[in-house]
Image (cartoon, rainbow, N blue to C red):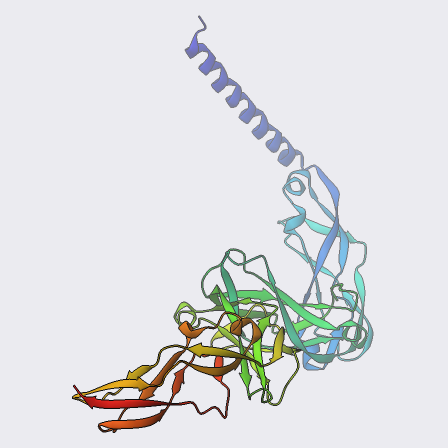
Length: 403
């Protein structure tokens, strides 16, 4: 069995030996004063005081520069300098006009006793142009999909327009300014920030322009989705002697979205009104859908609707019984010389086919009649889909006598 205490002591001894060696190395470097040079490549250049250019309606044609920097110092100190510590700077506050200007590069972030030995470009040549601007409407796209069963029913932007600044060449490339917000899996009202970027006609980002504002806050109103039937609205009447036998919308249901309290009161979506006045033939018509306030139509339409119009047909119906209504108190009523009556009804062929005496009630109204013999006009209670043909006056004789 291994001695655990021996193993632990051995590890501690190794660590102490390593630390002693490191400190001896550091001391040796310091004591000997060993120096060297070291090159740091592609140090980004920070541009300061660019607001002074804007105040003069000037702008840099390029904002992206970098330089290579050679540093001199002790080996120990240079070993501690990281590329990210170095900042190359140009100050453009001295520029007052359009054209090319040579600006000195300085470097900050150096430790004590480390100096700049060389910069591959001690002076940067910068091009300055007149500042131009253009106003653009902000275009916001939504990335992702809302939670299933939900839909964005309203959007408000903190700003619908922005101003793009830059030189004439870059401004001329800008055709749109766009941003995007993530809506994935949301099911309630939210506000999201969209950072803006300028794009050319090929959809590429246009660099070296400034956008004000640089972002837009987008407030999204989210509603639930509901499916409801389509109801066709009509006005007017078809030509006399014809009947509208069928209305069929090729889209029977549509999806709508809204807040729950609004959706609860909506059971159908109506089409625009189709005028049937004087029509005698079947026809089709494309009708828009009428949304209600507070909802969004996910299926915007329009909807194709077919109207079937047919000539009315006639059918004779024989009645073997007649009902008595409002028989005067104390009197009995009986039909005289009654062998049945026949009436002509009018309507759709498919309806008339099955119509018989059981679907229509023949009755007479005895209101105000006294004892004796009377001739009374027969009336009919017919289904909504048919009617008694006009110019029919059917009368029967009745006798009223004391009970």
